[in-house]
Length: 214
Length: 214
DNA sequence: GCCGGATTTTGAACAGCGTTCACGACAGGA
DNA sequence: TCCTGTCGTGAACGCTGTTCAAAATCCGGC
Image (cartoon, rainbow over all chains, first blue to last red; front, side, top):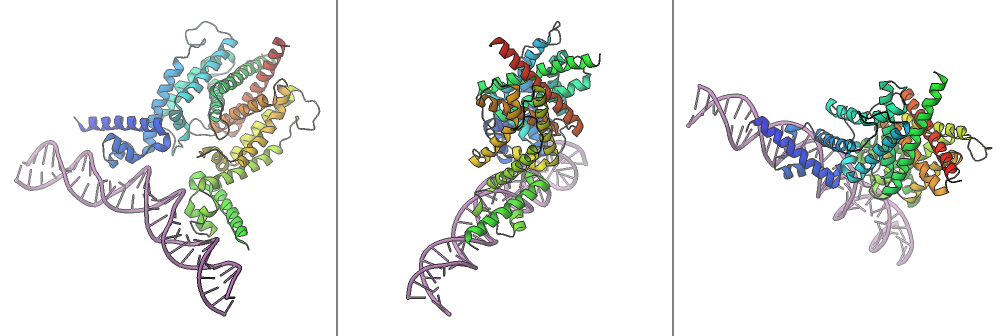
């Protein structure tokens, strides 16, 4: 086995072990010495394939993004690429379903999900990480295009991020015992209320806008 | 000077120093040894007035909440206690102003504000901390009572927290370089769009509701 | 004023962390 | 077999929050 192959195998094993540690006990349970013992390598070996533990965490987070992408892709939306011409109500329904699937993912994968945000970057995330984010946001942009056909691509992308941020805030603080801890049905009700209101408010706004500047 | 008085003075000095450290370099810059040197006490003395650094951070965070309360109280709202009978549009305007004041506070006090959420609790926050939160949410509940007079107190309180969570998500991720970093005017535009949409959507929902079940 | 028990303050020591790097093991050509 | 360059190693470094035996201080009784 070549040196390169062994490095690659070590890399994969470390990501596996790191993911398991995070799943089990959260980001705080990720210890370099535990990883080395689990994988069966020397402590210093970790730093031959990763510059530091942050890079390793980022790789685990990429896996989490992929995991979530599978979940969100399974959500049946009326505004998918091939669909006909869905109305605003269908688009709002899509947004609600997407938001609820985000909540479900957060509840089913609490530690993995927390690691995505709990982790504070030293520098900017690498390109391959940001690219994955961009892909995920396309799911939100599709229904948004129905609600606000007046928006250009960049504006729509920005609004999609804002919608996600709002949903994330509701889920994040709703599950956080520091502010409040809501049961799953109550939290889902709040998400449905808020996202529906957002969707209706946005369409109303578009109508207002088109009347003022036709 | 009695022992009690000295302890109290040390306590205040430690909170001062901790606040200064957080303001300067964020939560990560809070070091027990630095605090002791700054205040001029022994390292162990810290643990005679605080069980651990988390408790000290909590005291700093309470100061931050008070600081924010002063900022939010200065916001002129049409739905203040003594006001007449403001309409839904005025209430939505109030919500937008409150949200923007939240954004302004976050931008003007970045490290203090981050410490509020970055800090993960070991146990539940003490009562005196939660009480301050409850007081702050009253500012949101007032406009909300205009938009949704059909809601009972508990439901309104819950929705107020949801509205805050959504706003917090937009501000938090909007200022986070991990997802995106938005300029102050762009972020404010997104907040205005989202909160306005939320407000209009909520009133529409109330109207729908009252039509369906009059 | 002085003593002795109680109380308070102290900072060296401890356990743990991420990260490094001089060293030894090892592979392959001479 | 020896030499050389590459690679993996784990003890060591510097840092962290927290503890606790010991020192210093206080204070009422003689």
